[in-house]
Image 1 (cartoon, helix red, strand yellow):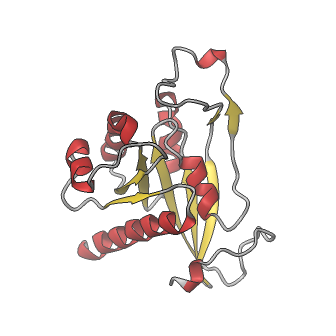
Image 2 (cartoon, one colour):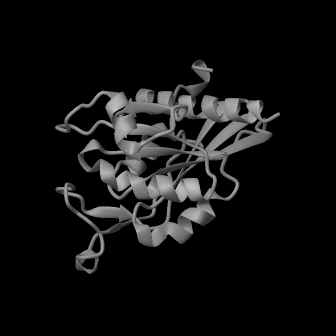
Length: 201
């Protein structure tokens, strides 16, 4: 499986003719947690982005605390693809992070096998809302801590306690700019979802 995940050059965007199966996953998380960067890092095709410049209209609406220099935000979704093997493609849908986009999250979640939730330890309390939305809608998920430069590092068990995660919910760490760490977290999620499905048979 590892060799199938090596990044090809982003010159061809079509799905190989041999692909007969696909899996849809969400990349979720609160505002500014690194979802667009994550999808860009792992996608074998040029990702679809719907970023717009943050304007004065967001003042008092979007919480910019702890996000110095952030000038753009996703307003619909990010989209990327990974061909896992000759017959199986993984489609990634990155969700916008603001609460006002919850109806869009629900639409993006339709048909999704599960979600990878990115969290930022500098604003870890912001993750509660995203986790609650997924739990209310029955979407299975794993959590990955995006290790931002300059952010304090915490043991994963402390983060698990802070987020009040179930004991079997996978928790990993990554750097959204580094494809290898992102892929490890995706593999952890897919293995978790596979085992959950197998246990229900």
